[in-house]
Length: 160
Image (cartoon, rainbow, N blue to C red; front, side):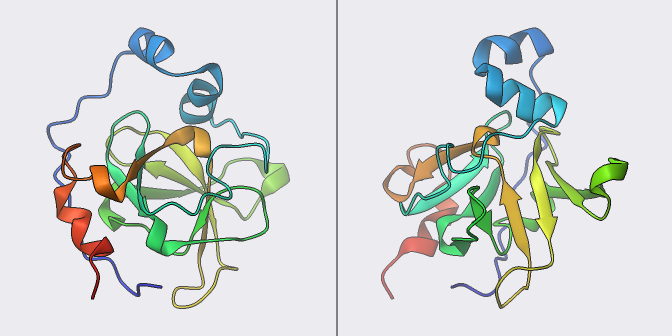
């Protein structure tokens, strides 16, 4: 496990697509999760048990969010990470749902996409569990990072 990610990312060039464009670009579950704070089914989603190396980006904006190096099996059925790849791309806010009080919602900074929630029952070194919806994420394999414009993250997967 890595201990601290110190990457930055300039998302100032990003403009969130119009709602009509998002409805065309995203599947119904991706749209519901990212735009209406939906939740996909546990264990029946794309990334909950993925072991591939690479990074996860916001399906709406493309901003880098998490690394497979920081992913762990939380047993919940959703992809879980103990820290963000680029802390500045994550916005945390208290969940307004009275019945589910105590949760902290996680959103992307530039896309304003609902990603999931963060809890304080994760593993060391952070003790956090970022429990994300696969529907809000796009995976970029380590071998495609440079070609897709994420070359700065290749060093995460270099042999040491």
